[in-house]
Image: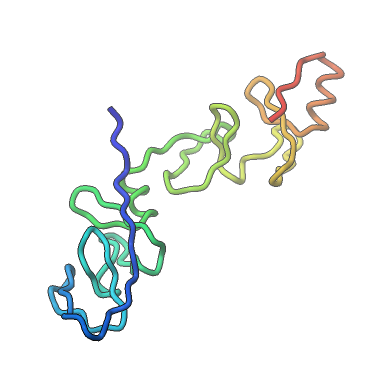
Length: 156
């Protein structure tokens, strides 16, 4: 069975002046600031809710934190430490788990490698590309091959 990542939301709340100060889960001191963070059913100073690896303030980098092995992590470090990696179908080099990728059928590509494998034309969002014998082709190269070989299209 595959384990799913454990992600939790972070809420920024205004401290109401007439309420009893809440204790911070990070430093155990009372939160007297104007704002506090609520995460993992606990309250935190904005400076106390940090990634265990890179020390970034989690309230500033997004609205989600990740936990595993008793660590509180930002998304990037969670994926770097526990994410699944694979190899690029074009260059065969490792793709870090936190890196953005392009996909075509079962193939995964670095963004820089997602280009026609004959002429190296990079694709933009919305561009038509073709997959032939596990090669990504631009429309021009695909149609030239179609004229020569008579192969059937797989438009993506």
